[in-house]
Image 1 (spheres, rainbow, N blue to C red):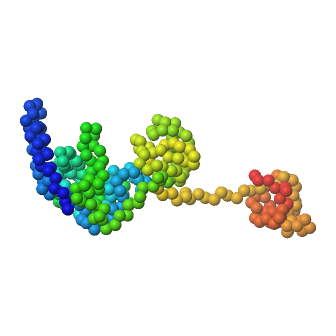
Image 2 (image 1 turned 120 degrees about the horizontal axis):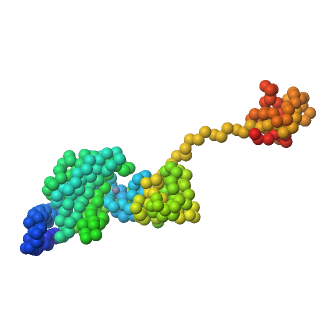
Image 3 (image 1 turned 90 degrees about the horizontal axis):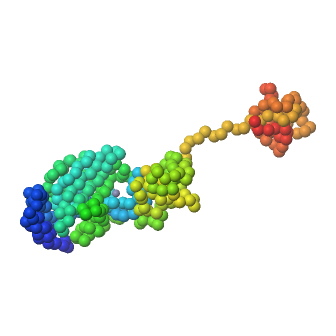
Length: 341
Ligand SMILES: [Zn+2]
């Protein structure tokens, strides 16, 4: 059942009060109120709709604290993710006016934003990860609840094609991110029940991340704080999901607590860098040394290697004997008279 709410009455009352006020801004306020009233009419008439058709998506990430899903991702998820095939139609969750259309690229998430007047408050719904944002709508266009406004894409930081739906409520202290799933559920639209499946993982108490490249580990959440040490690439750390300050997250490395820029962490351990193996050591003699044909004191002597001569690398070992080459001859010497160069 979809609940019918007295939206029109609420907003029209507010509009009437604004129109009646005597102020220098009254002309502008009247125009704005007229737009608000028109939007409210459509909102109350058409109510609320799913942003993607039922049973065509997986609910893949909850709103709220989470582990960073991919390098550059956020630790507090300000939207709800609906994973769907690329090109799946996206619908406005409520009537409103299109306020932004931003095309996506591989590095920037594209989106369409729609402003709504709901229960006397201003909300903005944002539909992210689209590629072209103007396939269906233009800024300033009025849309109805359930009207197709774009298509599911995979632009920006994203691990697969999905709609990231955000809902912001305007307030005196700026906009606050709302849980769109909870908001819609209160209005008769259940994002969870309408999903093919809910694949969103439960938020764990701590997340494990790894540094991407050498990263400074600091005493506080900005580059103004002193560096505890520089962590090599691939250093493991733990983090309490959701906590972030100005792009820095508090983490624990071993038993040491500090801060690190969230941009340089990944949930995936980077593959070990390819390093050339260290060359084997070479040796020199510390005394004149017999080079023998086999590893035995009784074996025939090939020649005497002078003190301080370079015998190169150890070719083989047998008990205390080492196989080396000197002056083009290969044989065995006693290891007691060899030293690493
Ligand atoms: Zn998301």
